[in-house]
Length: 96
Image (cartoon, rainbow, N blue to C red):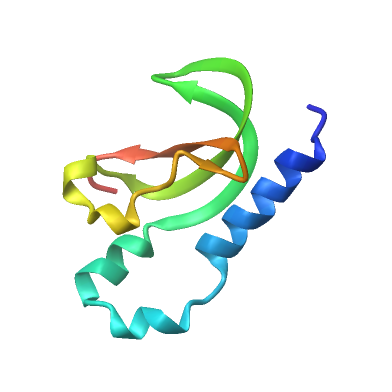
């Protein structure tokens, strides 16, 4: 896969957003901070939906456990894109 500058910049933005320690996290409720800790990695790869791969390069957000959107506070939803590059969450459904 050829990594464009735009894709690399989006990767760096996502990595900083999810993997850089956040001093404000102490002010957030415990349940919210636990959900935020669900993100365990950021990568670059191809979009996958229900096991099918697509040729579109995306920012992959790796999570311990995929959750339904209604279980997560809106402010902790994974954004649809970083720097104009589509995101895709990867993780196991249900309990680990």
